[in-house]
Length: 376
Image (spheres, rainbow, N blue to C red):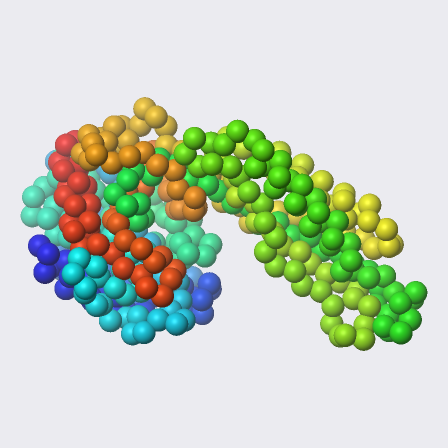
C-alpha cells in the first residue's frame, strides 16, 4: 500500500498541471488524460469534460450494490506556480514527508481517490461512488461549475453527500468562508502636470475609498465572531491609475476582496459597496465614480443533521469539526443541495516553495474514506 501510494504520487507530481489562467501554466489536460487512462484500465467509463482551453475534468461512476444512492468524492487537478522551487515536479521523500508541487494541495488526495477506485472496482461498494476530478479550483472554479451545471444534474438520484479531499490535517471541515471581488473606477480629466488647474485628479479620491474600507474592517472585527471561522474581513488588493509622471491622471481603479461568512446577506455587502462608492463621490474634485461586484463565491456550512457528517464523524471519531478560512468547491456542491464536508491529509506548504504531505496521513485518510463508504 505504502509503496503503491508513493509510486502513484510520484507520477502525478511529475505532471505539470499549473493553472493556466492563474499562473500561466499548461493547464490540466495532461493530468486529466493520465487519470482517465487509470480509470479506464479499471474498466470504468471515465468521461473527460472540455471545460476550456487545456482545462479538463474527469468523472466516473463506480456502480454499487444499491444504485439508488451515490456518494460524491472530489479533488482538483490544478496547482499554483513553482517560482523559487527546486525540481518541483520530482517527488522527494524525507522520512514521512513527501515533497513536491501539489503533494499537499492536492495530488496526494488524487492518489487516494485512484487507490479507492482500484479497491472498489474489486470489492463492490454498497452505493455508487462518483469520482470527480476538476480543473481550475485555484482560480475561478470553472471545472466545478461545469460539473454542477452539466454532469451532476444527470446523476439520478442526487448524491446523499460529498467529500472534498482538500488538505484539512485530518480534521473535518464543516464550513468555510466565501468571497466577493469588487471594483471601483474613478474618472477625472487629464491635463499637463504644469497646469493642474485644468485637470481632475482621478487618483486622490481613492483615499476616501480606502478610509471607508478601513472603517468597515474595524466594524467587521468588532462583531461577534463565528465560532469556527472568526470574523469576516475586507482588504484592498489592486490599485491602478495614471499614465505618465507629467500628467494629471484621468482614470484610476481600485479592486478589493470581501471575505464572507455563512449567514451574511448579499444585501449587506451591497450596502458596503454603496458606502465606499458614496465616500468617493463625496470627495471634492469634480470626478465621477462607479462600482460593482464582479465575482462572487458563496460561503458554506454543512447542515448539522447531514448524513455525510454523521458518518464521517463515526469513521474518524478523533477528528475535530473545524472551519476553514479559504474558499473551496464544496460550496458549489452545497448550493445544489449536496451536503458536503472537507476531509484530507496533513502536511504543510500549500502554495509555498517547501510543499509536503505526510505519507502516514495519506494512508489514514484512505482508510477512513474506505470505511465510511463501507458503512452505507
